[in-house]
Length: 164
Image 1: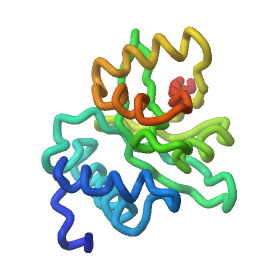
Image 2: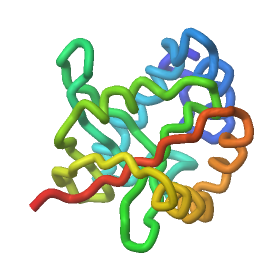
Image 3: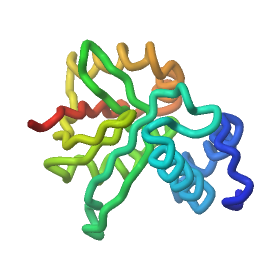
């Protein structure tokens, strides 16, 4: 999927599933899609582009675990009992997404949500807390329940706790 062919539709996103869930993980098409999402999100003052305009999407900027470079990723999010959570699904593949490995090594990340930018502390939820947050998130992100059924790993749920 060349950059000029990215239309920012749910159909384009679904075409990336096999790439994302592959053993190699996300490739150039996914990177191009994510880069376009980040650029359009920012130029639209926090509104996701195209068919995603009403989707619950935020941007997280963190330091990469291996390289130490800064990375920004667009993620679906949910608000569960006033808590802001993201789920490390990688489309239901057997491995966590790379961003999850990065986020757990960060004491603080930068979140862009709507027109707001704020620092947050990522907290991996566990046990009953994780299960309740996951169930609540699936009310907003219905597809996550399907991703959980595709894998034997428990999909991590990360709360983004605003700092300050």
